[in-house]
Length: 110
Ligand SMILES: [Zn+2]
Image (cartoon, rainbow, N blue to C red; front, side, top):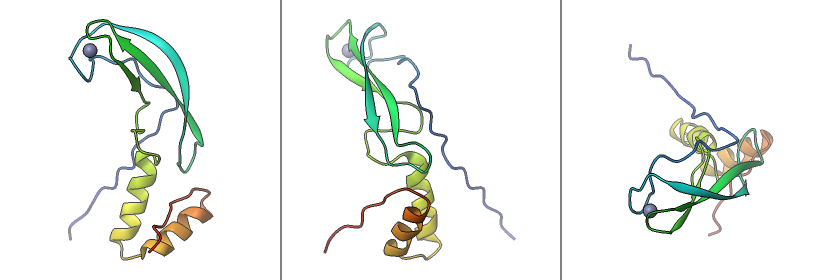
């Protein structure tokens, strides 16, 4: 019998400092501001993101905590919803189940 391991990503609330600029690869930054990021997650409603300016190319970028990307949903919530969907549960029922857990997963209209 084959066994599977399910690893739900951990969501942190504050970001780690960046190591490289996503645009030019530079390694020196100036911290500009802490910007709260609203998040759809099973545990957190908001996390802290940090805005940096690259001292090499002068462009700004935002560093999000681990388990959080540019998307509205956390990696953990997306993983749980995908696993439920792969188990054969319909999208509407997955959204309903996640709503019972206190999170929202928007069902597309149409
Ligand atoms: Zn740069």
